View (tube, rainbow, N blue to C red):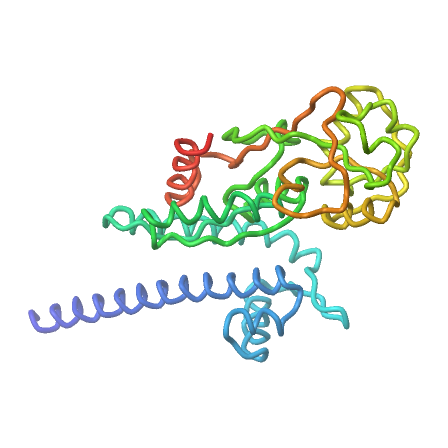
Amino acid sequence: MFVMDHMSKTNGYLRSSRERIIKEEGARMSIHKFEVLLKVVELGSLTKAAEALGFTQSGVSHIIHSLETEFGFPLLLRDRSGVRLTVNGEQVVQPITEIMNWNEQLKQTITSIHGLESGTIRIGTFTSVSVHWLPGMIKYFQQEYPNIHFKLVEGDYQEIEDWISNGQIDCGFITIPSQASFEVIPLKKDRMLAIVPLDHPLSHLDRFPLERIAHESFIMPREGSDYDVRRLLSRFAITPDIKFSVGDDYAIIAMVENSLGISILPELVLQGRDHNVKMLELEYPSYRSLGLAVHSLKKASPATKRFLEYIRTSHS
């Protein structure tokens, strides 16, 4: 009786242990599959995702098919241009992103408890910040926290705000005030300057008269990057004659160099390079206010909190 009872208990223990191992392995596999799916969505290609993750394309296809079987519906549409989410896929990708964010936060919390600082911080940025600020920030931060890594994602103001809101990045550089409600560390006031061709009739002036904007061919940053310029024009009730709308700051400069119009850009974009344009301070000095934003500091990962605290104490 004792032997039978003991064997029964042993078998029950082994069975529960096996079930626990299967559940743990299943959880790891789900996280692994979610990572693959998000990479496919990010890159819009099974082949590119496979290359980025070190898999074969057939391996990635198998993982996606496995997820679709588990969920009971297709997640991706495939065509000549690549892959995109189905309607059902769009509904599940946000919860999956949140699961991955919480998984990363859990790993960082565990390593922090063990006295280690590690993890990956995803930062939304734009070219001028990536060139002039971030390298120095990261250099000195990693001297103290060498095991914290960074993933930089470049976009315009609107894209960065959207990425913060939906959890695709941990924090991001924005212009203040933002279109959404974030916790923001104010960093710098950046002068807005007029740029005109070198042979422009007003290039000899010390300050550019704002009323002239309405009478010039104006090159506007594209929607999503134009917050600062439009705020300035609205403030002085100026309606520009927009001839071009351009997404890249340096393309705008090149167009001004070729006398296709004038524009207004932040000083940070213009500094550190030789441009064949004349930079003029505005008649009424104007600035863009830059900050580093996070959706919720309380819910931020330990690595992100460390970085934000570093920025707050050393750069704000």
